[in-house]
Length: 427
Image 1 (cartoon, helix red, strand yellow):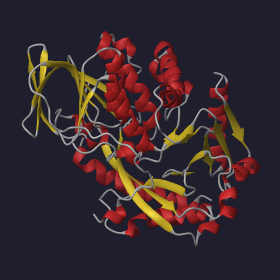
Image 2 (cartoon, rainbow, N blue to C red; image 1 turned 90 degrees about the vertical axis):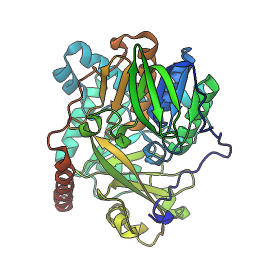
Image 3 (tube, rainbow, N blue to C red; image 1 turned 135 degrees about the vertical axis):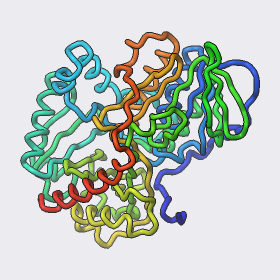
């Protein structure tokens, strides 16, 4: 794919460590983490802080996957509201999940503060924008549930959301002040720096191709021929999961999230669009999400085609959404286009697996990956150090491949097209 179509707005920090790809042979580590994204690096950082020896193996380069290519929205919570979680998980587990979900944005901003990460951020909240009266009623229900638990949230009427977003045609919305925005590439690379500083070893360009159990240890083999032995292995590959753990890749549907960034907005437009610096996601079936970048661009993303993009036309649906929201931006150039791969689980919840003792896997971010995986990495490290499943917010579950998985993406593509058509009729 031409470089012009993989050009994110996010920039690497001025000083980025170079992680040696060579691996020292011999010896045993407490944990090998496969995948150098937010989940893997958060796990490595917290495990190293707990005194464990950790080796991170990244198949490519740090930040080149979805962790460094997402929209940088740090949103607490899950796809489901508190009452649903209690109904489906029971009172004890449900309340624990609610408390965990409420903490995920804090996990990111606390890490930035405590580890002194050089990550640009703004913490002025996230707006869930309601494009219909039905969506606004759902937002009111969500507001009621979270306010009852003391969350710093507020329902917005039509005038308030128009003033806060500068966008057209919203009926109202919901403001969650716990949320914020970051530069996701800087965050990913700074997590790596902090993890390395804590004692974790990190190797890029080291694809893991085989896992074998040898007594109480795991033998981890890489494509380069290197072998390591570890007491535990954590697979943190999410949407980039392959056949390393049989059946795991068939439990998720990988999707592409496309994004565009305008040229820096002229002063008059910049002051009217998202003047408070919030992030926004709308309530459409095929939602769009947007924010301003540190250099004053409007960044907008949404679901893209299932195949890899081949031309600028593959981002045309986002350009139409941009002008629908902000007609005044029709003549502002789109300067950057990029995409990342994300993973969808059938129940829209993260899945944690331990098919054999010491072999752990995590899949499914559901659009909340920055906060969710940062917080989950700490819990995973606690589990590695202590071995108590109660330290994990989600129950460990069996690997259950999606029936007829080979056809699932075709069905998802058709569903996306149908939902997009329905959204077009709802104004």
